[in-house]
Image (cartoon, rainbow, N blue to C red):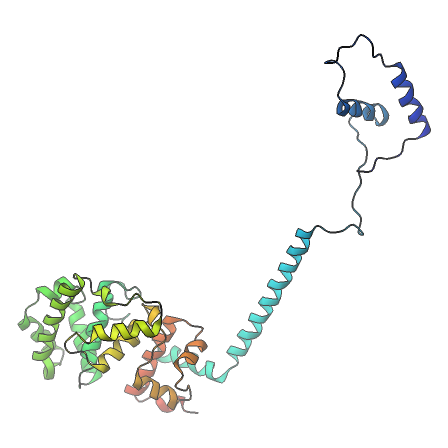
Length: 310
């Protein structure tokens, strides 16, 4: 710190007071410490309650390194934000992005959110069993309208609950399928549903969600899941594709996936067949990928492909 220079009058006063101050007869414990003496001197010179002015850094003073780091960090954050804004503008102006956004907005829904299951957005046992039932019914050589009608009929009777499915009789299952118009495969499907309940109980401890792979690598996870799904009677290659396409919305480690028929539609409307590239255009969002799969399926089944041709 820099001290202000004393005037001549202040210097004479300080010297005189020091000369007059008694030093003999005072015990060592009663003598003031250097800090206390300095405070007393400042009080005598500048008045009580006032202190010397201390040195204040000027513009030419060097800035602490921590301040430089903070300024640098703020600049880097601003630069990164600008880059994100530019990237966002590029995305929204892309014809392909606009096509995908329109496709999902008009035809894309998160799979099985409208069939009455308790938690369609979570990978609960009830949700996973519903996805399996959907794959089993939809992969048969039958109208997609009848397949959906049969699924809704089973959901209405709470067949998404494994205990309910296990407690049902073969005759009851046939009756539900017939009422929904699924009569062509009523006997065989009723049998397959019974075998499904037994498989889940014996192999997965009655928790069907355990069929989902825990691998973080998507390709390895899909390969393992494929082998597990093959053990379910009534689910073949098409059923496996349907299940993976729909369940990826609640089990992101399977992303990105599009079935072979969905890929054909994607290529036909100009999105290409590179699933990873399409997933990147969706910002790597699993739910959006599942919605896109639903939208592509609807384009094919409901014959709306021409709406998106270039």
